[in-house]
Length: 392
Image (cartoon, rainbow, N blue to C red; front, side, top):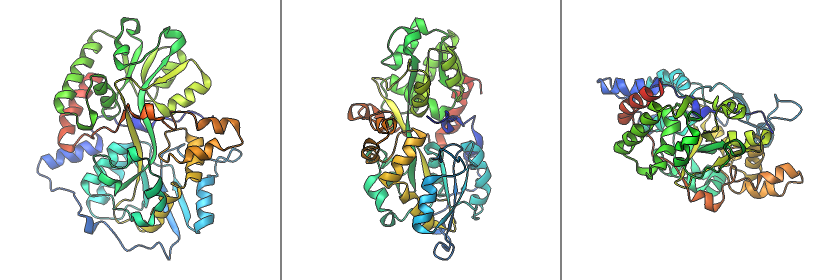
């Protein structure tokens, strides 16, 4: 198994650059929106066979004997002749947004052809008109193989401007042996035997959906009233010291050491935690859990748009998607990759095809929902309420 990845989902802290932009708009600063017809630039793809691809650290397959080699990228270059300038420069959604937003606001080329950001951040790019519509006829693998459950999020209907890189589930992880009972629902976290032994995520975008689902809310169309009702509940749990603390990705250490017995968790982390400790269980609660994605997008004025679209389509070939899934262990956005893994001669690789945290089964999918994103108009007040609860 690979070393545990730090979760790029936990990278939001406070309002950040996106919140600052929203607050400036509210104060009368001219809108930064770029209409579709002004997003493109002269495409150099045919004469300049390169593409610049920026991703998070440890979020791609590497060669077992040489970690500097990335087999799926090498296969793309060999097949197409397009050289990939790959960089692991995205360490925080807001930090990256702050880096590229001045250029995008001023209609300048950022130097990025293709980037991966969490979907809540991708929503900002789409709403601002900072992501180019893709030429889907040039991407037959995407059109044919993209997971139906991820095809049309509220922020980008029809996935015209974004395509999932990897997906995942926000659910509950717990130590079954140490706790001595099963956890089936979010409400089970609030039982007296877990007082002081529970952690929640500190990031608003990471936390709110699962907690609302625990209250029976349809998170595809949640309201501010639903949000504040959830916050009232969390506030009372904080007052009673039931919640030990709010975390970033250090929750994995707390759970492994036994400092906590149950916590909000990501499916990708759980796969790797279970490899070290089979007593760790991951649960999609009876009331439901959030299915999320981190997505590829092509920023405005990218100089190699066609090359970027070809690279995206490469990763939607089931063979390539299977190779990536076997390495990173997140929910694969290409269901057809399951058959590829199942046919592997390597036993451990073949077993991944049966792991519902990589390929959710039909029963689990019924309890998964893609949450409506937080709008710019909502974010300032909602983030302020949430951050006051978690101490940010």
